[in-house]
Length: 429
Image 1 (spheres, rainbow, N blue to C red):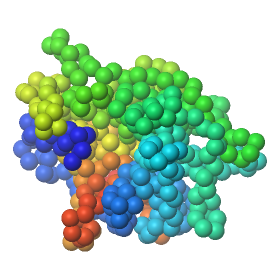
Image 2 (tube, rainbow, N blue to C red):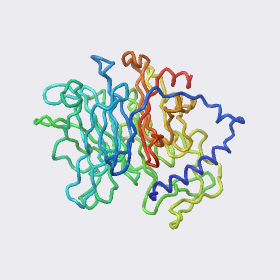
Image 3 (cartoon, one colour):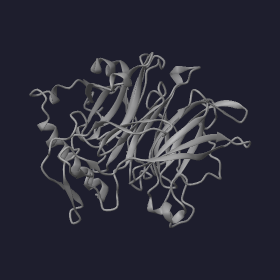
Image 4 (cartoon, rainbow, N blue to C red):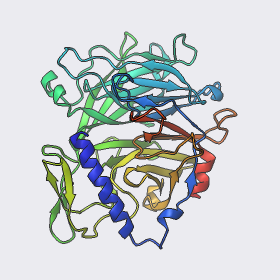
């Protein structure tokens, strides 16, 4: 178990204990609505035999010309990218690029998001944008469902610079590009990516542009640093417990294009609401249950030992906050969905800022059968409220499953689950 995993494991235990103390009606947690997956991808294995593939974050690309041929594009960390069809069958695998030298960090694809209708090479194209955590770059792939050999083509400009690092030595420290959200400014038509920095609180706004060679590059516009410590109502100061030198990072992010609002999940803190151009003041929209709980890092066990809960945390999220996605119901309505990783639930907030993003409900994704399990310790999630052929005429939600049961001995496996969006809406409504 790595240090980060040990810290997270302690956080999950704490979250479970704190969840029991939340003033909900007796048995409310167990009565949460449950939805069941309709399909799952083949398991990925984070070992040498499995190519160091570890499922993390999905995105759903809709084929407007033939919705039944839509795709799910997902990251597999050191295993690169995977592309799946609506039957959850793999149709393409792309390797992450190696590091520049044998002793340098290898490529590691962390998060993925999509841009539609970007002008490149004299025509409009849909793009998949990826954070390459290992090399501290963005990678950009053109989507063409009719392309022989697979729908994705790498169009990253060879000269792109590191997102956060000054040189290769810094890259090898791996305080690199981590979480990701993309958006297109409706006023200007310009396309952007927002990347978070691993083990730091920094977010960077990057403008993506096409080159005359038909590739895509990017430039940094601005950065913003979220707080690493917080003033509590009793006048004290609190910071989430972590390994020495690590700050409370952001991974799950999404931009609501309706109002140009970025929602960023600071894993051990809560969900921030920020103008997508990073020009305004961040607001902490909701807190995790563990917010304000003192804890001490034990270097011998590599775990955080929690103290007494002072009662300053939220009621809906158990750290880590992951997998933010917008469920668009049209006319500005819908939900912000968040993976509450510590208690294996998904939390729905009102999408409208005028309604203060109020809590709307929560649900779990549980086993459909003895051979099709649910989603646990979910990292990434994506949702699309649009018909996707006969298989998903009401739309689709895809979530990462961090503890898949593959029936292959003791090998740890991860994967992605497909959920009919109609079932999700019934659970929320």
